[in-house]
Every structure is written in C-alpha cells, then in structure tokens.
Amino acid sequence: MKTIEDFLPQVNRALGYARTYNAAEMAGEVLAGRAQLWQEGEAMIVTQLDEKPRETILRFWIAAGELQDVLKLATKVYEWGREIGCKRAVFIGRKGWKKPLAAQGWEADKHMVLYEKELL
Image (cartoon, rainbow, N blue to C red; front, side, top):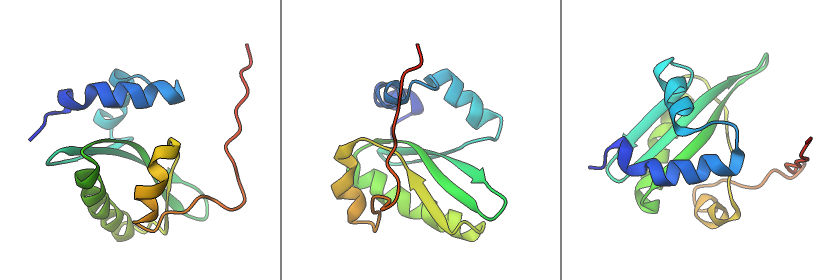
C-alpha cells in the first residue's frame, strides 16, 4: 500500500491547477478536521464538507492514484456522505476526469461553468 508521500507528485500537480493550497496547507486542513483523508490500496481522496443553510455538500477536493482504485474508494466516500446526510457531491477537475466520472453517474452541471479572471 502506498503512503501519503507516494501521492505527493500527483497532489502537487492537482493543487497547482487551483493555486489555492499547497500540500502542507491541505494536510493542515485534514489535521484540523476541516477536510477528510481517505486512503485505500493505490488511491487517496481528500474531501471537505461544504455546509450551506439548506444542505451539506460533499466536495471532492483531491483524488490521486490508480484510476480503478480511486473509483473504488470513491464509492465508499459516497456511502459515507449519504450516511451523514449529504444529498449531493461536487468535483471540479480537469477534462480527463469526464469519462471515468460519467461511469459513476457524475455529469457536468447543466447551468454553470467555472469562469476565472486573474486580478493582477
């Protein structure tokens, strides 16, 4: 089984796209209980609960490892989310996730697109 350190290259690459956290800061969120670390086999996932007035959303933050192991682990994360009352999960990721996520029932939001503007 891989250790968290084994996933660091993938985690750093994914965090680099978003530019909001580095691996140490993400680890701090997990240690503070503001994020959840899931690991099994050759996969790891980090989630956060996004608590809103009308619902709690299970937000997938980072997924790394062997694709089939990530998808298998994700099913356990979905179950946990249901158990704690989440009715929806969200994930922002690169286009390469579209096909494997579609196989698990994920679909692109029909109403919103993520837009970004640098304010430098």
